[in-house]
Image (cartoon, rainbow, N blue to C red):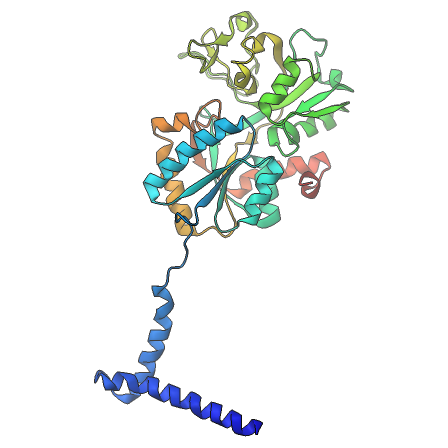
Length: 369
C-alpha cells in the first residue's frame, strides 16, 4: 500500500512538471525543449522581485545608540536633530536611544545585529567587537585631534600633588565601561603602584567632575581634550601643560550665553567644561593632575550584520551633516560629545585599547560584567 502511494505521488509530481513545461507552448512562444530552462529561469529570478529588507522603514527604524556619558536629555534632543538630518538625506528612519550604561549599550547592539548603529567609545567598541563582531566605521575628531586622553582631576587647593598621593584616596569615575574615565587610568595606577581606596561610579564624566568639586571624592578620572588657544598661538601639543596657565585661572568663567568656558582667550574643552553652568568656578576649584597616553577617539560603529548598502548611505550622509550648522546643535555641541568632525577608522587602530586591557590585567569578559 505504501509503495502504491509513493508511486502515485511520483506520477503526480511528473504530471505537475509536464504541465509547467507545457505552459509556455500554450502561449506559442517557445518549443517544448526550451520550456524547462525558461521555467528554471523564472524560479531563479523570482526572489529578486521580493523586497530584501525593511530595515530603515517607518515600521522598522534603524536603532541609534548613544552611551550615557553626558546628560541623557542633551543626547536625546541632539540625537533627534541628527536622526532628522540623516532621514532627509537618505529617506531612512532612525530611532534614538540612550541605554542606562556603557555595558547596556553594547548588549543592545549585539542584540540587534542587523539594524543597529552606536556612538561608542574605544573600550565599548573593542568589547562589542569581540562579543559579537560590531564593526567600526568612523572616529570622532575634536578640534583637529582624532585621539584623546584620560585626565586625573583633583582639588586645586588640596594636598594631592603627585600620582603617589592618590594611594588610598576615594576615586570617582564615570562608568567601568568608559575608556577614558576608567580603563586608560588602570595602567597609570599599575605603573605607579597606586591602589585607590573607596570608589564612586558617578554615572558620567560630568558627575565625576562634580564629585571632586563637591568633595564627594578625592580625585576623578574623565576625558581630556586639549584647551583651544587664542588664534595666532601655537596649538596645544602632547607634552604641553594640560591645564590652563596659572595666571589665567582666576579669569575662567562661562561666556555671556553660557555656551563656553573661557579663561582669557583660552577655551576649556575637557570634562570640566560640562559643569560650567552649575559651577562657574570649576576651574578655580578643580585642576588636572596627570594625563594618560593617547587613545583613539570615540567611534561610530555598526551591528555585525548591518546591510552594507544602508551603511554606505548613512556614513556618506553623516559626513555631509558634519559640515552643517545643525551639527553644532547635535553631536558637535560641547554639552553633547563635542565632535567637530569625523575621520574614517579601522579596527586595527583600536589595538592600543586592547593592549590597555591586557596591561591592566583584566579581560574583556571582566569588563563586560
